[in-house]
Length: 481
Ligand code: NDP
Image 1 (tube, rainbow, N blue to C red):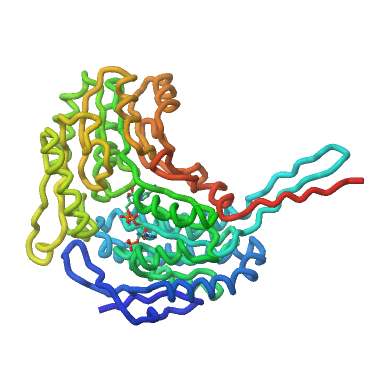
Image 2 (image 1 turned 120 degrees about the horizontal axis):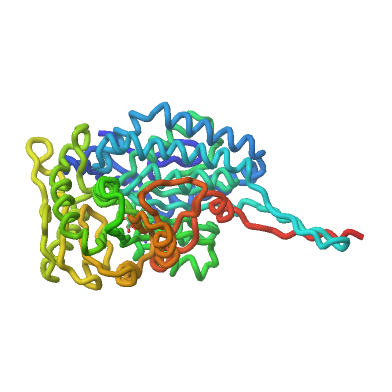
């Protein structure tokens, strides 16, 4: 069985304590590799390497940094099949999804930021005849990057690529639940000739490795994507140390459907926005609000289409819903279905674990689940479930839809389906969320600001905003006479 290694100072090495954790294949429920159970000493070793690499990397020309990133993007593309297979086995997601979304997007992240840095410019401010100010944007230093398990390489690279392009060196931790593609990325970085210490990947538990990165005295900025509770804990440590913080956290996204929508497009997309990646995408719409005249028709068709989704072996091309990432997460999702029933919800389809045969009989599967009859403000409709579970609720007026949509502590993403142009704008203006998709879902332009409001996060990723985060602006003022 494979032993994953840490990537520190350009080398693949064992954790200092030589301790390992089990890595499970969620499709089978069996251990299939081992993950370093690293601790603060491994993190400090990684930090020392990153610190030593920083002066040369940050002063390398943008063109040269760009070349490295584009080389990494190319190697990801060349290794697409291998990386997609690894992602599917590690996470339980359908192989097809990993091949068409996760891995291409990881390559795109390196490509986008590798080229983006060449166009990143800072302003000047002229004081007529008196002085001129220019702004230097300087890489902050060693960046700490921590990412979750739902889109492993996709989100890991979404942080690392802008950090490296901006001139930071990095100490990064992927989720201990899905470490494999980060490990393969370290092999790719070695092949790409990335200088030693520029990127360091330390594997292990959030409470040990993640915490050691966040509380490390000399790591001045933390880019974190994960749950809101973890984000709060990280902020409580990092804020008093005056670290720069970017927090991309949980969501409970509303999907608002008006009766005048393009019905077929809406229905097909709503299936994706509900159940893609087993509903484990922070942008999935988990609360679906339907204008009353359309409610019964939508309910019938949505249930019918949901029942057609094949739950099964993630490596099988016909599978639409793969395995839930871990047993504890499967249990958490099912506990929310029980809660929904206690709160008076009616399970219209799904609602239980799916038992497969043979090699997959110990895997963690849940049938895509639709629940109706719940109050908008009950716990099921307020707390993040992060699984293939959605609720459906009718509404009568725009005001009511908005009130329910905005009623949670979250504000990450939202979807509005309507052919009424001015209503679309009105809704977009009033929804409390970092993203409003009108008549689409998960359509992403990497130049746009990405992030949430309220308990969904602080700060924005994407485009030049990411470079703003990984650099510090310095005002230089020159008196002209
Ligand atoms: P967690 O918050 O549990 O973990 C995220 C990362 O933080 C993991 O690498 C984890 O390590 C690490 N971690 C855990 N505890 C600590 C700690 N005390 N200090 C530092 N690091 C720590 O989230 P999940 O991995 O369960 O991911 C799911 C969550 O992520 C959902 O809430 C989802 O909405 C959110 N998410 C948000 C996105 C966004 O862009 N806003 C995008 C994708 C997901 P380990 O796994 O080893 O414990």
